[in-house]
Amino acid sequence: MAGNYADAAKYMNESYEMYSDFHGSHDVLDSLYLYDLGQAAEAAGDINLAKNSYQRSLRRRPDFADCCIRLSGLLIKNGETALALVYARRLADKNPQDPRAQLLLATMLEKAGFEQEGKTARENFNLLMKGGSVNRPQKQSEPPDGDHEPAKDAEESLEKKQSEPVEKDESATESGGLKGNGSADKENGSSNKENGSSGAPVKKPDS
Image (cartoon, rainbow, N blue to C red; front, top):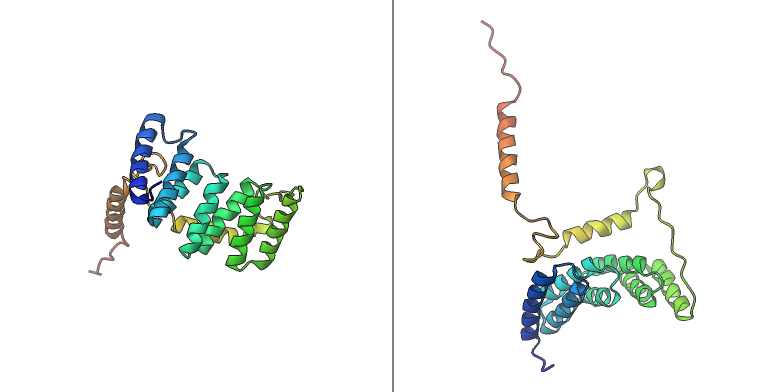
């Protein structure tokens, strides 16, 4: 409350670590702790910690509208419009009847240059504000004739490329641990050696 956001973020981070150790990393309040930590870090100017905290909060609770709105705004300020659109689409898919989700989606679509889709989302927002409801589009289990959705594929690929750094308490639980990379490299090296030794047979010279 005194405006010392850096210390606030530090102590909230320590508090979260203790809370997570005692209750487990997937407790019902876990996403709220991470959301509060993200807000403190954002106010302190620590963009990386804020972004990381918001993303971790949304992994626990993908329908957390307030957190998704804060994260999308932060990504826009950081020039990551495409990634902000990924989260906006996901929120609208989880909460199609939430006017905040539709307004966020409309804003992100417009900023990304998808004017027609943005217009549709904004119409959905206006409809919801008047007490109406949005028809949820049906999803196809497989695209017809082997077709793919390039926009969706590009967004998922972008999110993977821009995934946040793994925190200490995340390494064992969510990412499945980062150990084994070195052993994988060794295995690749050994396989290369084997490939080199098992090349095409050498033709013997004629006697």
